[in-house]
Length: 309
Length: 309
Image (tube, rainbow over all chains, first blue to last red; front, side):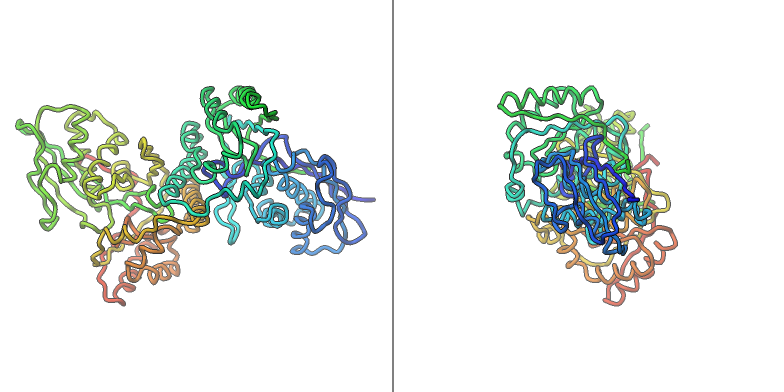
């Protein structure tokens, strides 16, 4: 009899405003599922991909699920085989951590099949290898929150130092995904390679304030700290409606907004579900005025992360 | 009868490693005292300065005590006069927040004489004006911890946003003040005006880690985070023995070291009084080998700040 385990991993918001490249958080419900089945035939094989519109690769050395599992097996040792089925719940290239969710779900399922030799923090190391294939850079700010849940700080990469932060009760997120093609390499190339000491200091003050706000459950401090002087000033120019939306959500009591990952999805943090729902309505109005359709998702910040179904 | 109030304000460490320009903390015992006496003759007068070797100005528009009090009175309104006596306990130009301690003590005494119209956070605004005169820049990372005690984050200056952070129990500081003339303008001029996005991101990760470590009382995380890639690489070159000391204190279990303010004083954080005392001994040995005398001060991080005696 074949043994199968299926896991879910959530969407994530990386580059949380002043947390450029070091901070991410997880979303509820929205995410990918991966089923891993033990097989007598050695090696890893992707046998099914659903919900990707045919865009994701089946080759084991290119698929984020198999790359992540292989990184784990390279360390753990394993003679058997695994067959992987991927059920995409996340749109590709939207800035919601699509590739990270696939890798995280794959690792959770495969790790469970092996009897859980690794804890979630250890799995982050393997998931990062999948991000290297999927994004061209070994970022952990999507995979770590997708695995661990909540807000996660990536303090360092050499070695990887992942710190789970507290999630204030009642903190809600609205994700607004405008139907807009954003070339990831464009989004990277507009980043300035050099910045002023003054801007670096402003960013430091704000990330320090945001971390304090999370520990103190101080919504006002979180709101004051949600400012990005590094990536946003250039990247926001690629997202029409970005600043119009910011003004609109400030008027209805949201805490702040930013680009999710490298966009085009925008995240908005709110102090209640009610405000988060109003943000969704207002967001759709703002984008409708410039002729863009937008998908809106409302979610509490997910403190649980990826799990076996 | 004349009414007098005397106050103490502690020495402080600003630019706490990765907290360049945004973080400071207060030291126990070491500090300045200021006595303020109400007078019928209008205006502010410095009538006595002790312990400065004759280097500090008596002119009200140049002395940090009177400049700070004047900034307060400009807002509060006051028709009378005040006479100020300053008793310096801190060496000048050492990087231990000497001018800040004088301003903080002066404000605490004058504010008490007026019946405490302002709380300590409000007094920071006035003390910053004194720093503008003393240092040429309106920094708050010495005056805020000297007034409030503990670790204090300066999230922003426009407007001033001062956040008191928790102090982990058992956290000790050793200050090592080598007898070395360090020109403040040299120390400023070696700072790079531009930095790479990579270095800014590393600094962000470390300040976020340090803030988390303070909230979690996680000495190991504090230790991993005490890294400064912005100011230290150039400023440390002006302080002979800096890196030799770092290696020596790592071997005896200290958490980390950095330049206090713009130097030449070096601060070392330790997880116990015992280690902090060993740091003092080792520090004196390291500097003796290069022919420098050094004063060593050992203190718990002071969570109380300035107070009326």
